[in-house]
Amino acid sequence: MVLKKIAAIGISALMVATMVGCGATASTGAAADAAGEAQATGAAAAEAAADAAGAADAGSGEIVDDGPGAGVHVFMFKSTGNAFGDLMYEGFSEYMHSIGEKTTYQSPAETTVAAQVQMLDELITQGVASITISTNGDSGYDQVFKKAQDAGIPIISIDSAASPDYRITHVNQAETEDIGAYLVQAAVLIKLGIDYPGDGKMKDTLTTELANYSGDPIKLGVLSAGIDTPVQNGWIAAMEKELSDPIYSGKVDPEIDKKYGNDDLTESTTQAQAFVSEGKVDAIISPTTIGIVAAGQVLKSTNSPIVLTGLGLPSEMQSFMPATADDNAFDFVCPYMMLWDVIHLGAVAGGVQQAIKENGFDGAVGSKFTMNAFRDYPEQEYEGYTFASDGGTAVLAGTPYVFYKDNMAQWINVL
Ligand code: RAM
Image (tube, rainbow, N blue to C red; front, side):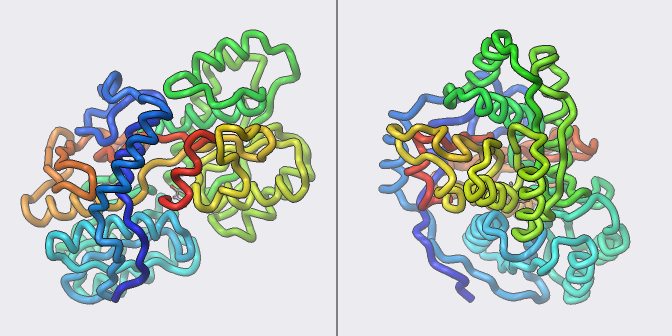
């Protein structure tokens, strides 16, 4: 079944051009050593890369769902109705079909552990080939994961991790510590009215700006997904760690005001409205593509002085962000935000499932596999490393990427 057809633009070339911080597009897994490679090259290179990517359209553009059943690889997101999950599945499905495998996209309507467990139980009974899951919580899956293990069905997680006791490995989108740190830096810079300073320059710019800042301590709020969601909680812990850096001392409140919208637009909107009516925070960080849209709508419609950043899809955030270099970024509720190549992320999970099936990849630290070329990403080797958030293993798929006024126009039709 073909779910939808979109223009499959090779996007990795654009991504390389403007990475935050340091690091290559995809890591060999030696995440901590990625510094220095592929330093970002700025807007001119991004434009050239966009042209090249547009010309070299390597994707099929078709998203295929073979339906559940024996021998089919299951991709399960937290819930339906979330474009982030749809884009990951697009990459997963395209990669798996390129190697002759069948896939299905199975996610519950509700963003809960119980709903995922019930679906998994049925799929395991059907004898599916593998499970790739983004979880809604860090517990409650033991029984169903054990059932999969007993049936010889390999489990990996993506985006939001499954327990290391049951997963072969986790596909980590970008380093957790980096995402948390960059989101705090962006939120404070935006509150101070500073345009995105360019690749790798946020911390230095912030250090200088905060040294000169003598106003009231800046208060950050987080509009997250679920209270137990592993991935968002990992990022929030990294935000808190960043706030313990002495540069923030006395300038930014180390306590983050946290609210949870459960990746539901209505609930997220209610929580964003609470931030506005309480009037306690200066900036909201929403590390979820659903939450950031809800916050964007609320802040815009109430003309709130609270500023916004987080993790968002350019296509969904275009009415809350600047889109041309001539725009004043501060005329918009969200002057800049981040994400990564979500389609490639899903494809890397396909590469992991292929390696498990064909080569017995076990995800152990130091174990390696090679993923085929995908769209305009060349063949790439990945390596298991320790995932600090839970002590299990992961492979690293990418690097955070900043969307801001100079590059938004290139992205709104892509992600
Ligand atoms: C949402 C989901 C997902 C998260 C992205 C950034 O769609 O909560 O887990 O990684 O946003």
